[in-house]
Length: 274
Image (cartoon, rainbow, N blue to C red):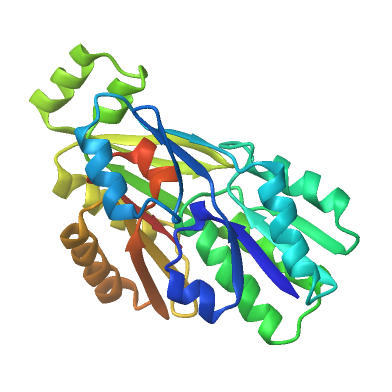
């Protein structure tokens, strides 16, 4: 069985290769120049370009041809394909996978993660684990549905700069937020991003995220916790340390957040999923 995902999963290259996962990259446009996520634009380069730009970067779904080519590559060595993707409520990426599915004469399941960033990545790793244990495609999909329902994704936004660039927040509101040191914490609910709470200061906001983890009353000793950061590795490492201390999860996967979700989170953002 071949597992396929898209570049929104934010899994490091070495983990993707180790688990034999194929990736279909999304597209990024910054100041009129087009890039292919992870191919000709690294996460580090993305944050430098985004910070120096007066406009918010634009992301777009892969072309159907890109999906078809990836599915054909997978079909050469397997009769079953599981394709796990960014929430259909946030992107049209799944549409390309569905179109490719109809063309490939193989058993293909296209799965909506209803998540983004590490929320996609952890579901991909869960699928790889089950595949390696010999689980059937149908069994993996059913267990992923259960896992998806339980999964929580919480994001801390350091700045409203990208919301201003994108026209979602006025500069006046941004000035007020900066004056009061207001930070937003959002979460993913049924595939959509919704504001969870607005607090004063980074420390309070991150403590609130940790309290949210505790409030869900989920035993993390057998679960992977994912943390992705928007060019703020020190904050991410501090969050990782606290999560390990408080909840002792089986594993904490820490990586940078890529352009697909990082465009909306903005520099300094932190995502935790479990």
